Image 1 (cartoon, helix red, strand yellow):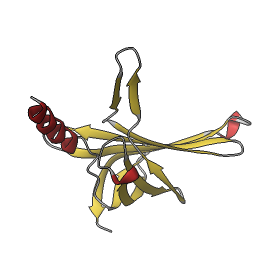
Image 2 (cartoon, rainbow, N blue to C red):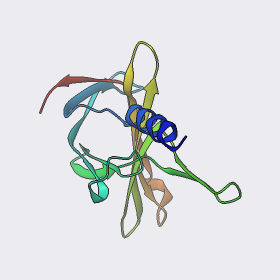
Image 3 (spheres, rainbow, N blue to C red):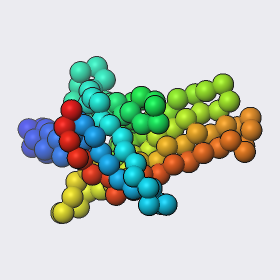
Length: 143
């Protein structure tokens, strides 16, 4: 029984990784302008291949930061899962925070990122808040 559980866990977990290719992704803003981001590297915290340990380095808006699958913790049920549909990253600033959210699609036709949202939240001056979204992103070239 333990062997079957181990095999099932390995099969399921290998399909759950983000599966992003290195290189440039291009898309379009809601206003119809071209936009892009670069996936610079994919690594795993503590060298353990697990979706919760996956770290993807993204460059956009002259900034490089890591995104990862957010954990979904149910302390009542005693489970620790992950959000397979999003990769998120945050960086604190003196005025607030910067965040990136990479939305993933898992369909028969396509498996990968579909949109990226860059958020610059300035809690000290709400007028300066900014949100840029890059829609319909697709991999265009390798690293």
